[in-house]
Image 1: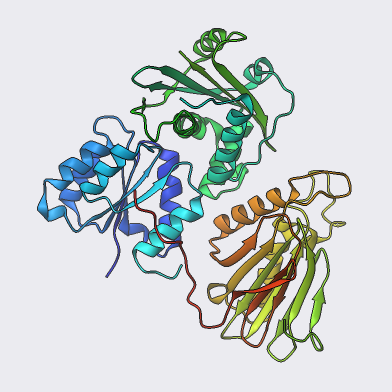
Image 2: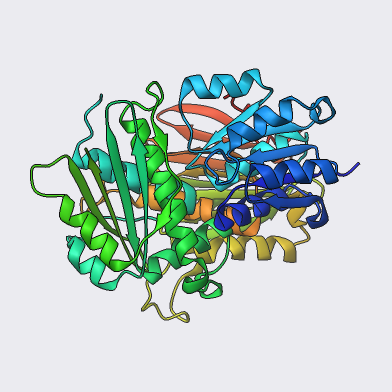
Amino acid sequence: MNHRILIVDDSPLLRATARRAVLQTGVAPADVREAQNGKEALDALEREAFDLVLLDINMPVMDGYQFVEQKAKNPQLAGIKVALVTTEGNKKRLERMTQLGVTHYLRKPFAPEELRALVAELFGARS
Amino acid sequence: MPTVTAADFRILVARALERMAFVVAEPTGESAGEVLARSRHHAAIEITGDDHRAWLLVSATAGFVTEVAAGMMGMDPDEIDADEHGDATVAELANVLGGEFVMALGGDLAPVRLSLPQCLDDAAVDARLDEIADGERGWTVVLAADAGSLLVASRLH
Amino acid sequence: MADLLQGTVVGVADMAIARAGQGPLVTYALGSCIGVSAYDPEAKVGGLLHFMLPQPGEQADPRQLKPYMFGTTGIPLLFRKLADAGARKERLVVCAAGGAEIIDDAGVFAIGKRNRTILRKIFWKDGTVLAAEDTGGHSARTMLLNLANGEVCIRSRDRESTLWEAGRRVVTAPAARQP
């Protein structure tokens, strides 16, 4: 079964970097989608099936916190893993994210190969 | 609140560039003014805490932007159009460096927030830099990589 | 470390390819230099590169430069020569050692750091996943590749360690961090 990944970040540069990392783990281009903010991300989750969301926090329209809170209210989305890829380092705010089901975290500035490794590990892949 | 020295600030910026974009950037003695005369892309981010406010500004030459974008996206520099990627690159640099600066100020424990990065024009950049006078709580670092130069400045209110 | 009776020493700014039965490949004096090993466990062929500097200078004459002196030229050439010898890139187990911070004769630091950065950059661009690495620090290293089974050993400061052993799954990530 294909792994489907949603990349959520307002930076086109970051989305391109994350896309490269994901594709290098063997995910097909057709199984990678992008969103520029939390609202677009929620819309994407309603339209299509995903296994993993790579999520920035600091975004316009709807930020990453609001996205995670909204996602947590929908039991149908419970199986979708969320990995934060963010500048956020505040322990209390991150703890709240963990309570809402976020399981992985990579703080910016991250080494691109680390993001690749994180995605590969999440899907048990040999890169 | 922890102290951030000029050397801390320079190391924070250099480490972030190396980690996220494989860019090795070092001080060359160029002044902020010299870089500003050549830089084409600028962005700033606001930092807000309970007791303090700060801003952090990034200003980069076309060559520097190209090197960062190429590094992150795993491309050759000649595949990168600086005009196409310039604003996004300095905006993300402001975002990331702002985040690192927040952590250096104790942001893992304090309720400090980053704004969204904003791109600036030349006049807005000059105005910000005029705010940093000698002896103020300000930091300025100028670094050069293979292909271009970068100015990062910050002021704590 | 395995007996070097039949092995090949890879010198500074050099590279060698060998097969199972031809004895190990070893390189010494990896200070700020970086050793890159690559082994195809099915074809049982491997190579070892010892590069000194990240990239040639802009003025360098391509006809004059020693390609194995630099990471940017040596690493792609290592992979190409391995492919010519029957290795498949997707099967290669790639390891790296060296890149220490050592003051050279001119008192200049940071070549080790620059070499580590170029290694990361090249592998990000070409999609190579490092199976294991032993880089940084302040001590010189010796790196040995056993062509019979792909085992990679490192010696540093009179301590030997196995960087990679046959049968180990390529680990692509450290344990992912919790928020």
